[in-house]
Image (cartoon, rainbow, N blue to C red):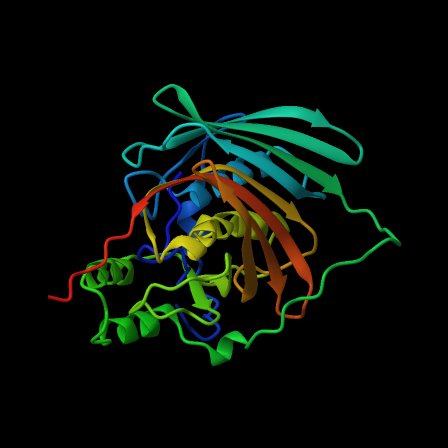
Length: 319
């Protein structure tokens, strides 16, 4: 599935105050609102299509919605593992077929297959668990970063970039295209890099992220589904950051995606998305991610591998 990114630099790049409670998140009302067709069979439609392929986060989120509808209310998803096997067609809906692989007293497993044109485009297994107390607990410490209230939103950053006289000619078109998109999530990057110069960067990036609109306390399963959607945004582009000064991406898609859910959270509240790429090679890139609540609790861990094909970066002539 396609992995959206800022123009050729792999960095994620919106702000509002707390939304009014009657402004429902489009992720809940539209994107993740599946149509039931039969028992364990659902149809999903598209809201935002960033390229000629479907956004991978949409497929992951919709598949988790379908799986969650087949388990009882007292269990919660703790992990999911997915493979993208074909490009999704944005012109037709996606059918989600759920198989109740196992229903146990503590853990239950559901397998989901997403189908278009009679062929699977995506397969996923999600595991659900009854809440269980444990005396054994630990987590990493959350990175120290400025709070979201002190950072610029995406619209402001794009406006600054477009006003930069040193901006390379190829960027304005891409920036205006990003500004025109109705992306259903908001992002505030930590230390965004200037687009006026391509530079070597570490394969790491962090940004605050949340769903647009109001979701509320609601069902924790829905917040997990929204986080699944969010987790794919600009994720794979982290692997491009050390190479953008000499290579230009011409093809980048996700191969697989995994998530582990650790603690309750609100997907319509700001969370810090910490992304890093420990390895790239063989036209593939590996990325790891952690979603932190503002109070420092580690809520979600993610991992993804994808295809990344590049060509040499061509310097613009000064003549």
